[in-house]
Amino acid sequence: MPDYSRQMRLSEVGEAGQARLAAARVLVIGAGGLGSPVIAYLAGAGVGTLGLVDGDRVDASNLHRQTLYDARDIGKPKVELAARRVAAINPSVQVRAFAEPLHAGNVVETFAQFDLVLECTDDMRSRYLSSDGAVLSGTPLVLASVYQYEGQLQVVDPKAGLPCLRCLWPQEPSPEAVGSCVLSGVLGPVPGVLGAMQAMEALKILLDLPRPKNATLALVNLLDNTIQHLGMDTTAGCAAHGGCTHQARAALRRAQDQREMDLSFHSLAEAVAAGFQLVDVREANEIAALPLPGVPSRHVPSGEIAVHAQVLRNEGRYLLICASGRRSAHAVQRLRAEGVENVYSLAGGLAALSLRKAS
Image 1: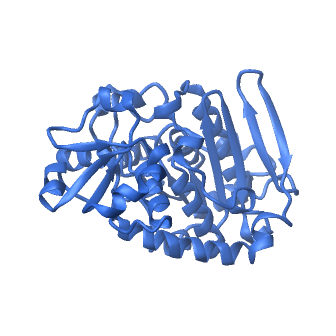
Image 2 (image 1 turned 60 degrees about the vertical axis):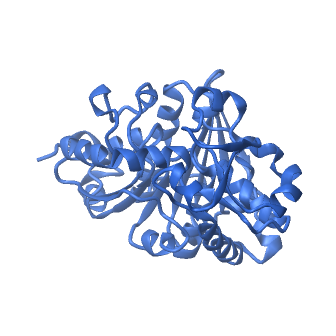
């Protein structure tokens, strides 16, 4: 049996609090740098059911920050490895594994099955989707993100009237504007600290521990060890455009449309055989490091895609390609807004092609 004696000695926990944790159902989206400490701490605390969402496999570049895994795990599905790690930490925890990312068609229904959600990816599309899902399902959400030596932490709780992600940033920024661990770099402890803070917020919510009453965004700087709490104006953002619920519903409708623009193939040769011309929207240094394998393509960096709208409008069908599918999807959205209807995005990017080959 797991031994919870150390945390049960806290007067705010005790037997009653431990029983609340055992009855809790928590969904963790992303089993990487943020998700690793979140999953380990929540499993150790005795959260009764953990849902784990991750469609990725372990890469050697993950190991300096994703502490659930080791070198023997390279190439294996993260969600399966994370589930095994939970069982090793605490066999009493029930795990529900989701090997496919959530999408606009199932996010609300899935969130409604849990008491709390933690978003632990470095994907802006996933963060916005999670915020919309939280608003429409009424499920509290803990968001975190990292950029090099800094991080942000926000709690979205529709029942408590806390603002959603769109209240701060109504429109999803382009992937180039926000960066990622792949593009910007990161030291391992940075997502470790932010993930630990997410886990602490989750336990505070589940145990009804004291939390700030006012809506704030925490900015964490790990170079000077400071934390700033920025107040959020709830009269702006969504409140000025029909409210969070209205904005979330509209966003999920747009996301459903986006899914129709995301196409999956087992190889790029298959896409070419289907009549698509390939457009690589990665940066030149990425292409030099990993060129497209033996297929003709055109190079247009995602930040310059709108300049080429007229050319792409007049010639055939195009499949836009990047490393993960994020930049290509955003580029397709921009082109569609310009009236270019013959463009699509490779779902999951080159990473998804690698996963399909490995499976």
